[in-house]
Image 1 (tube, one colour):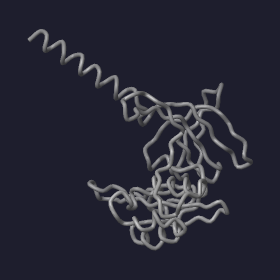
Image 2 (spheres, rainbow, N blue to C red):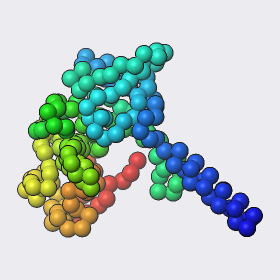
Image 3 (tube, helix red, strand yellow):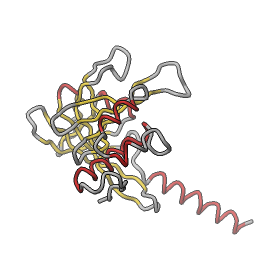
Length: 218
């Protein structure tokens, strides 16, 4: 029993350490904001939940203990370093980016439509943003989400469950290996980030349009 108790204690400690290794709501982490003149200001950011991250950012400039709360109309965007565990369980850091963009609706009732949007795909022909909308009085499904795709010319188009088929066929029309898979398993709305990455990979490499290749990770 003594050995079992010791083992249980070690397992519990290990799980706690694993959980604590990841960035969570309320943590103060390294990051920066970009003001409307394009200047990057380094400091620390308090991580919030998905809703508050879209509405405001709490920022401490490097060398200052004063907290500044910025709204989307006051910045071009912001970013912070998030600690996560990779597929092997190893601790790693990734940059989480938010850009100020105009949505078709507010993320919360009566809120502004100018919001901070999470930029999920940052490099290539298309950039991809994920946007959440709060659903009141629905505990099981507290929000809905959609995506916005931006091309190199600045065109900004929404993709959601209702227009998924039409929009993705238009966006990916040149890459036959992708368009023929749309709507099947692993090629639905929830898979937009991977599809955009794979399309960008095809645009860059111009391999056979009938051959599907998965984007190489850096």
